[in-house]
Every structure is written in structure tokens, then in C-alpha cells.
Length: 177
Image 1 (tube, rainbow, N blue to C red):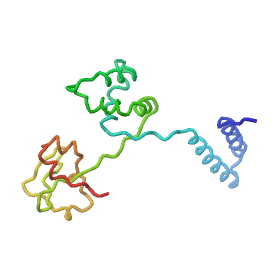
Image 2 (cartoon, rainbow, N blue to C red):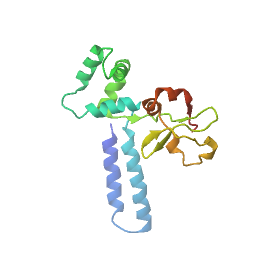
Image 3 (cartoon, rainbow, N blue to C red):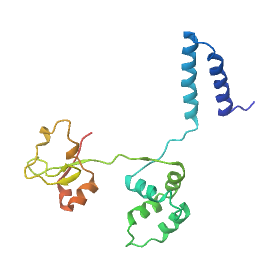
Image 4 (cartoon, helix red, strand yellow):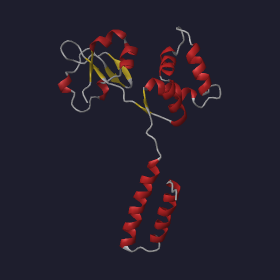
């Protein structure tokens, strides 16, 4: 007899219904256990979502729910894109990861955590900080050891640093996790 996940789910639901009759503490405990089992069954067929870079996730989100873009159209553009194309980096990634791109387009994805950096001068003081959501170069920085736990205003992605000023990238120091 070939039994599948749907059959198992039905049997678990029947057990839950059977123990739903009473507020007896034994029955309550059994219902909770059956609920946990049901949640585990739901995860059996759930494939792990691929991890992709943030710029690809943004690229997909901007195009996914637009009638003008389809998976086929994106692949055609990726093959034919020119070097001067605004989305060269994105289309290069699509071309190099075509099967993965198709999977994430159809099934979803998770975004890889971007590396964060401090921007420090030669004395170990911060030379870039976020203030009211904008990056600024303070006249006098803070020493890294004086930042404490509340240091997210001093952490930037590579792109944020380069968007502020490409020359600051040479002073970037990766944040230790």
C-alpha cells in the first residue's frame, strides 16, 4: 500500500479530532503533541529556499509582479544585454546562474546577509557615520572600542560606502560577527 504525506496528514487530523472531545489534561497534552507532529509533516516537502545576493533579490522584486517581465524575457535579455546596460551586474549573474535564477524566480528565495564594515582612519577612529539616515563624515570620529553595543550607525555595506565616496572603501574594515 502506497501511503503519502496527504494520507499521513489525514490520519493525524483524525487523531486530533478524537482527542478534541475533552479538556482532560491527558487529551490536551496529546492534542499539543499531534499539533507538533502536524507541523513537522508540513515541512517534509518544503524545499530549502536558495540564498541569493541582495542585488539579485532587488532585481527580482522590481520585475516579478510586472506584466512586462517574464522568466523567458529575462533570460533573453540576459543573453543579449550590452556592456553599457544599466543592469549589467544583474544580467551577468542571471547568465552565470541560470538554473538557480529560474528556481528563485519560481519558488522564492532568501537573501544572503551582506557584510558590514566600519570606515576607520589610521588612528582607528570612525570617519563615516549614519545620522538621521544619511551618511556623514564627522569632524572627529569615535574609537572602535568606545562604540559599545549600539554601533549600527557606524556599520555600512560596501555599496553604502561606495555610494558616499568610492575613496572611503580603502578605509573599510569588516565588522567581526
